[in-house]
Image 1: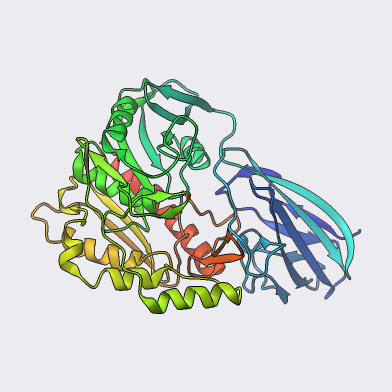
Image 2: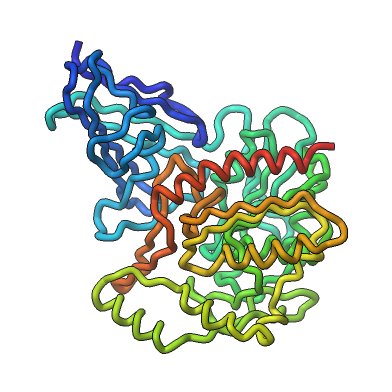
Length: 429
């Protein structure tokens, strides 16, 4: 019998554990498995792991620690999250937002000779889920819901500073029995190009529309990440419309708007046609010199110094604080202790203190991942896809968002289970 791959499922859901084995080897033979995939920008990502077959000529990826490779612990998901961009020194961001399935090619080698190639497919939704394009008045988005007629709890999903829609996240939630709307509010045809002067009334209209959808039971939860997490908290503090709120690596303050993907001194959110006050950035000279130096030597750049400098003046930032004490529903906060975009753990700690002083207690949850960075949870991170730490932002510049691939993947796996538990608990009647 020649060596071959044994895979528990060729077609599976994105969050389903895949068990990979190698069988038919000679005892104590060194074998390697190589994984590769492409993101939506057509960048190739690759990983590998080498193992020593046991006395029966078997390798069990979920139970065995690699002797070498792109990860170094026994992990059924290791070949997936450790994949990195093949054409850059520091790696790059794995881009995924559509609901299309992901194809991953696995190649088995023994003594560096290729033995077998298998392609597996990871799905966000399959049969039993309906996908619909939403264009209602000014609203734009993509809706996913179970095919079977019924009234389901709904989830509204907000993108972060990249704009567009998180269709893959909405599709996966629909596979769990939710009606999920991936809403576009900038960076998509039919909505503003930039995150600038976005009216909160737009989201209020989307929420009302979703509440009254024929596949919704009237309950709407809200999920946002990064700038979307900031927005989710702001909406919860403004409108009493949500069954629960999940805010991933959010800001505790309103942040300025963005032009062409970078922060700019413009208004981000408006309400009743009035601009909502945002914090004003202070750029320390040390950071400017550090940024220039790192750019010249091609070293990743962090934004963390901006926030440390800006947040020193508490009086000037006070008016931009999001009044999370006004949120009248349970909130799940998720943060990374090594977040290099902004200090999400500091922000969440501040909001935890505020929420715990409320006279009426809510069943809030606080997830702190000490070694995690900015990209560490759903809807932006899945333990079964390449974990994100760095991003090539053009001009030869690389940004670091913090954490490690392993820490971010571990946080993504742990938080996904807790997100599903939180949604289920908040939607029980």
